[in-house]
Length: 451
Image (cartoon, rainbow, N blue to C red; front, top):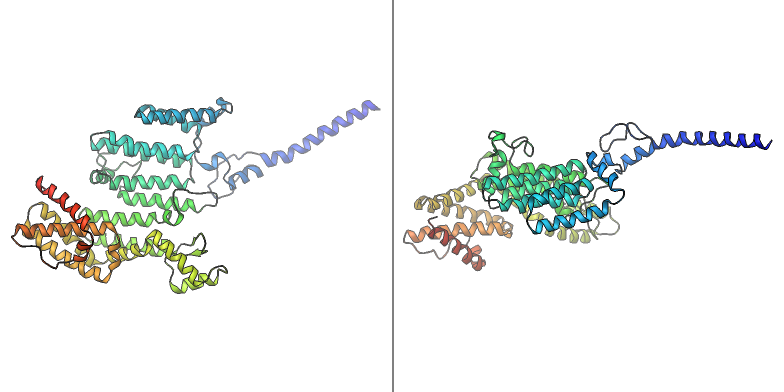
């Protein structure tokens, strides 16, 4: 009897275990295929689908490197210790400028910590900014900047929703390529790589469509903004209203750059029109949660501000206006709205052309033509700024005006004429005596060196 009862109990246990295995298997069945982000898994159990939905699984973050998984298994839980030692080693190698060894150490770190964004940002920045300046030839510097960009792109492949990595990639392509001392060569190389493998075309790994560096940067800033909207993504690079302004600002950088390259045509006008559209009708229409004023839109009209106040029980119109003013000042929103609008007008583009050609002729020592164009351009600017005084709020604009004035005065002196008592943009000259003196000294040095 007892023996039969024991056998029955074992059968009950066995069938109970089998019965429990069925729901456990259904819940824990792994996914057999990778679905696209934001879409439910097409296979696997409930846990696998939830892991995908909440972005907790390894395969939902980006490409999986088998070597990384193998290293983690081999270390038997000592990944943190190994990672710390490698970071200390990398820091020492950076201090000693052992770039080749640092690159190898970084490769080991990303095998251990492929989802740790700092390692991608650290090495990408290091290659593009620190290693590149150690080279003498501009072509070699460009090679290392590209290497930094490509390293960042590897990081985005392994961390598909990493908004900061996309943003930093855009910054390297935009500001590093477009504002460094070698920016003229870098911008040209970005579309026509000096490496003979690319046969005069762009390196398709970073610029598959042969676009301007600022336009490619804008694409990555847009991706960064798209990823930043995902509920499981956070960025801590900067305040959110500033972070989301970068696509529009990159478009403005593109428009400015092609003008600095000497292009003044319909392409330039359209570039500024697109910049104005991006700034006012895309960026300016976004909802931003302030620290104390609820939701605002940077481009909100009085009627829209009233509507936002009506929908917010904690803030009236005056409060909304106060917070809007704060955030507009932080982002310099009114200035760039006005600047992009004025710059898109053909009259401003023509004024820019006159000043550009005048400066170019100045350095070619064609004094008479330079004088005519500089004087005409400054008079045009005077008329434009009288209607839009807000444009003088930006330092770069002020410096460009003073530079044009200094060249104009220089050609007047060569012609035997004194500086006039009144002249175009005189208020800018009088309000910036220290800057005038500094820029005058730099111009004199350049003239003394034979232009």
